Amino acid sequence: MRKTFLLVTFLFFCGCSAHSAWITKDTTDTAPITETAYPAHNNKVFVTENSIKEGQFTPVARIDIGKVWYGSTDNVLESMAIRAREIGADAVIDVKTWRQPSGWSWAAPHGSGLAVKMKDNDLDFSGLSGKWL
Image (cartoon, rainbow, N blue to C red):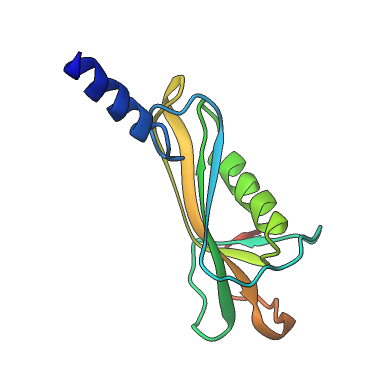
C-alpha cells in the first residue's frame, strides 16, 4: 500500500510541469514576475535567444512550453509568441529550446523564455537574431 501511494504521489508531481516526461497534452506554463497586468494584443512578438540590455524592458512572466509529440522547435516558438500576446508582452527573450522524452515521444520539443514588455514602446530589435511571430 505504501509503495502504491509513493508511486502515485511521484507521478502526480512529475506531471505538473511543462517539461515533465509524464505530460499527456501540449502544455504551456506561465510564472508571472510582475503584479502589473498588461492587456492582450494581436501584434507580432519578437522571439529571440538573445538578452536585451537591462532597463529597456519590464519582465512580465517566465513561459515554459512542453509538447508531447515530435515536431519542429518552431512550434514551441509559435506557442511562446501566442502566450506572450495573451499576457501583453512585446517580446520573449533568453529563449532556449531542446528535445526530451515527453508524452508519447522520445524527443518532443520543449522551450522556455522570458516574456517582456518594452519600455517607451521601443521595439527596435536590430542587431539581434530572432523572429517576429
